[in-house]
Length: 91
Image 1 (cartoon, rainbow, N blue to C red):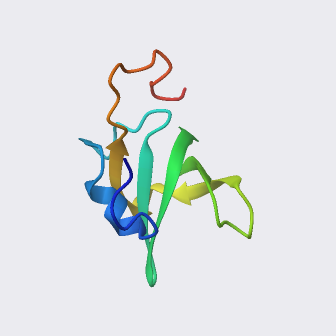
Image 2 (image 1 turned 180 degrees about the vertical axis):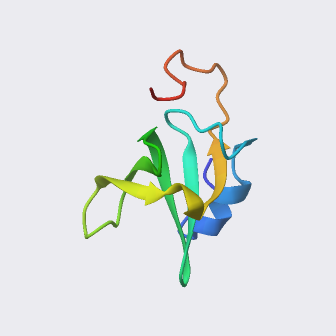
């Protein structure tokens, strides 16, 4: 079940299971800070400086973009009944 205010990125910071900022895995929701609010995306990978995330409302499209790790505010894991085998850190 999504948070009550699912259109507010900040509300996703209380949803699901808390994960350490350094422990993001495939499918986790990453919440980023930005001027004027925040942004919530799905983790798909990372490099040394940025997370690679799948998100909507990015240049009027659903895309995979890079967001600076320094902007990360929270990582939340879906409340799985049984964790899928592919929930792991991207290499």
